[in-house]
Image (tube, rainbow, N blue to C red; front, side):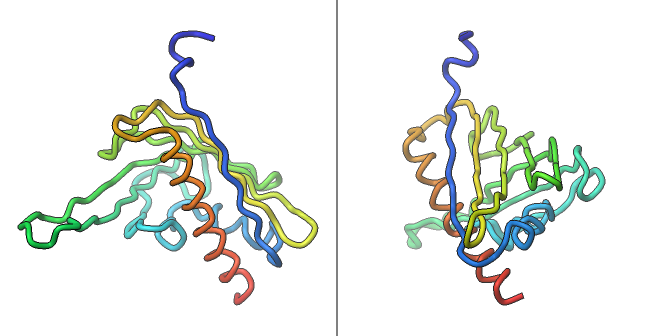
Length: 163
């Protein structure tokens, strides 16, 4: 193991959806620039460059956060990231993306999302490799990824079953 890879964080979260098939859920991920529909806290997501559905597509995602102490005259802070679609495989229902620029503290982050069929629905797998994020313990980051995926899975399950 080289020095550069020793400090990397690696993790994986899964969410099982009851009812919708992998073919019903995959389009939600394939539509790379609609993250605001699914991801908790993301207010805005739109295409910056590239071709829809093709590697090289770059999206801009942001969320507004409001100071927890409303008595202070703090302006809302916008957290943002530009993310690039690296690979997409419609047959395997899998895509990978990386964070290019951000103001959240990511130095390096690559994630892979897979939508897999299971007996009574489908399973979403979200795996990642990242440099440590200053001020954020890996356990807390893993918990954030897992809870975000559970939230997304519930919204996607409802959308697939009602659509």
